[in-house]
Length: 322
Ligand code: AVJ
Image (cartoon, rainbow, N blue to C red; front, side, top):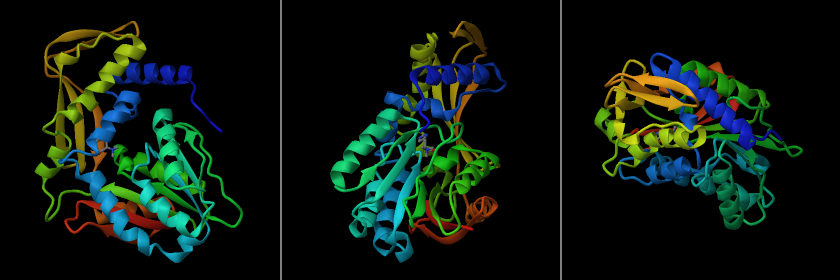
């Protein structure tokens, strides 16, 4: 099973930080958010009044779980990409476990702490279920999906995690996932939706710039992490959290804006910032029915059904590997 040791993680952090901060414009990849503190801040984000994504997706699951297609419930193993603490997954797993007491659940995530919490809380909530966690970056590392004999695989890629990736990268991730599957296996994909009739850009922006400042702390945590792990000397107060809607690319962007001209030392390298210059820390793509269909068809899946909330904020798509 591929695992990341502490050393390979720090090396990856150093590579990512130096490559991103020497580039123009400056970037830092969103996976850097998720150290222990970042993972906890993200959990707090999911409970914010402005952050509708998690609770909307959970409501869709709760409504949908009792009517899951029979072939999915019969003999299935569930593998989840980017499981995190898997707080939403329980709703679905409970449904599967009801008809399948020895359910095998395979969460894959980059954060060992989040996986430990997921394994602990789910094993307790669903006795009899086997949890087989895998610490892996599903973009850069190999991962495995086990298939008990005569079982189908249901892959979960929920929480709009795929929204962090460009359309081309998203295709690559789903094609790679498809390569782990067989025809007849299924994918449940959770995606945040683009502004529409009832969803405004303001709603979106508020979700990424909440009144309590949790998202700002989450964004700035990447600098805290570089300070600690790479002995960098970012002055956190000299950067501000910014959320922007990029309509042309259909994405929310998060940036850290340097409030002054300054030089920061990162792993022995001097990085210069102009006043107002930003580090682009995250893209969060927002989908339409058309962009979802294109993504899924292009990666070897066929859309079975799409579920969403009444306001069209969020979508959960069930697709079959073809
Ligand atoms: C975990 C990628 C789904 O894009 O909404 C939340 C991360 N960033 N607030 C998202 C995030 C700022 C989140 N995803």
